[in-house]
Length: 121
Image 1 (cartoon, rainbow, N blue to C red):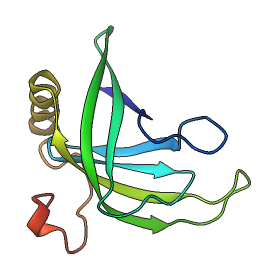
Image 2: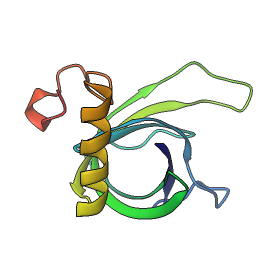
Image 3: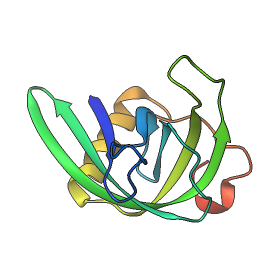
């Protein structure tokens, strides 16, 4: 399954999305790279695009930023790794992610350090 995330609520100063790439996604949250630091505990809405067997869908999700850590500075500028815990996820996307996780035989996302209380691990 191919997925891509685009930020909808908060835009970068240049007017574009701050999401540079999606790293992983699960039924409880998403980890993505951002072109700027996002405040922990801020609410965020994302557009998740999926492409499965030629069926293209766009899903709107909402969640809370629970971690934002700096990555190495690239030629394009600084990057941050953001973990978003879903507060709202469409039932169809949740089912799709559950099927993908079970087909892969494990987690579709890396373990987030000290995040057990959020249900990510």
